Length: 346
Ligand code: MRU
Image (cartoon, rainbow, N blue to C red; front, side, top):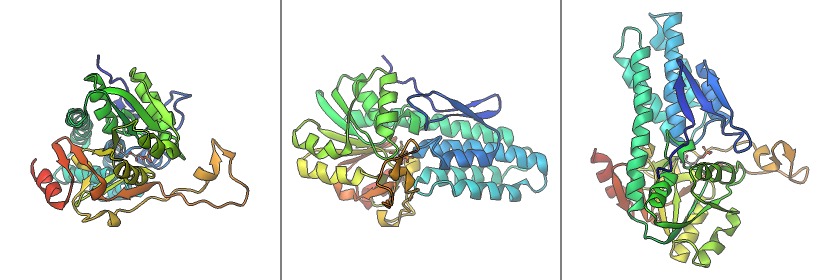
C-alpha cells in the first residue's frame, strides 16, 4: 500500500491553488491565488508553511508576477518584477528554500527576452516534481537507518503538507512504515501553531498510519522510558557545518535524545542546505507575534498583562545530530567536510 495521498499545492487553470493549513483538521478549504502579493501574504500568514512548500509556492508566485509584469510592460518587466521578488523574500526569513527558489527563478528568466510565462511555469513545475522525487529518495535512505520494530518521534509537520508531497521527516516515516519497520509513531503537538496535533496527525491518518500525540513536555519522559529509538525532524535551513535550524523545540529534543541514547535524524532536501552560512549562529531566526502564544484560536489564554517571547525556530548544533539525510544520501555525524562532500556530489 502506498501511504501518500496528501498534496497542499496545485497549479490548475493557470492559477495557484493552496490548501489553507490554518484551518486543518476541522476544515478542508482551498484558496486560489491571482496576484504575487497575495501569494507572499499566504506564506507569511501560514496558509502554506514548511520550508520546501514555501519555496515551491514562491516559484509559482513568480510565474504569476511575471505574467502580470510582462502584460503591463514587455520592455521593462525584468526590472519591475524585482519589487515582487523583494516582497516575496520579506514573507518569512528562516526557510532558505524561499531564497533558493527566488534565486533559481531569477536565474531562469535572466536569459529570456520574449514572453517568459511558459518557461517559468515549466521551471516551477519542475521544482515541485523534483521536490517530491527528492523526498521519496530521502525517505528510502532514512528508512534504511531504522531497525524493524522501532518507534519514532517527530516534531512539527515535515510532511506532504510542508513540501511538494510525501514529506521529509514524514517521508522517512512513510517509507519505514511501508517497509513494516515501525511499531509506533509519536508526534509532538508543537505549540503554539500545533503543527503536530493538527497537521502531522491529520496527514498520517489520511494515509492510514497510526499516530500517538504527546505534549512536547512529555518527550524526555518518553525517551527515558525507552519507548522511542529515533527522533526524526525536517529543517528550514542547514548551515555548511551541519548545524540545523528547525521548529522551536527541536534543539531540546536533540539535547534530550543524546542524554538518553536516542538517535536524532534530520531529513531535508539539498535546497535546504545553505553553504553560504558557515554555522547555525548566522541563521536568521523568525520571531512572530506574541499573540500566537497568548491566545489560542483567537481566545485569550494567558493572564491579561503577561508578555510572551515567540521565536519560532531554533538551531541544533551538528554534534547532536546523528544523521542528515538528503536526496543524495546519508551524512552520519555531520561536519563541514562531510557536508561539502555531499553537496559536491551532484
Ligand atoms: O513554521 P512552520 O510550520 O513553517 O515550520 C515548519 C518546520 O519547522 C518544518 O520542520 C521545516 O520547515 C521542514 S518542512 C519539510
